Image (cartoon, rainbow, N blue to C red; front, side):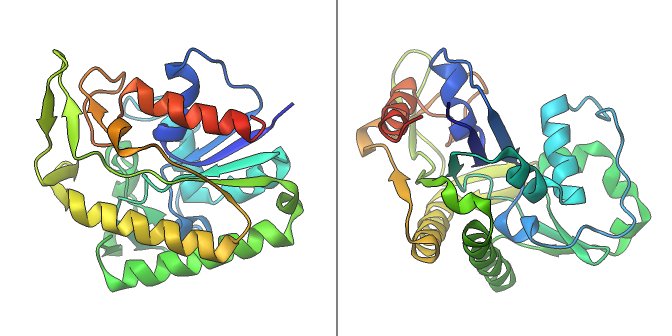
Length: 255
């Protein structure tokens, strides 16, 4: 039976529930960055056993894994037969604090953890900066080496090459265009075209570094978002046909 690991976002995790499937033997690592995965944990950070401030258990667990850097050990212990990467969560800024690095996600913002002393002198690393480019490239190279130097070398590595949709179907089925600037977090914005260019660069770099991997993508005619999506409207909450196309490709790879 397949043992699947996802290092990515809901665009891959949602394949199962959207298509009426129940995932088995699935490890889901999200709300992080390749840069953050390989960075030291911020010294002195404390986390709660129970989700604070109304966070749901899974997003809180993802946040704690990013703060405490437990995801790589969990990945090794899972011994996946297939590892699926997507880079949609590589839209968040990074935050350097306590000698470590974390993704500045919505979950971190609302958790209350930013009130801890170590974050008072934290330094933001904007996603659209040369510093973030350098940190991400280093993380990608470390991931490529990690895949080869551990039992993960036995897994099939899969890259889900996604893009932010430029248009969406509203509730009546009419096609609408997204605004060119999208709010990533409250008060923080990104240009849709610039984010897609960044995703293409990340995907090319990762494919070159890893070498032996399978690549998944959907055709342009399916690259639409949907106002009816279970998580609401977003450039990366797609129409159901998108997920079916990706699912068919995963089945061809033995999942």
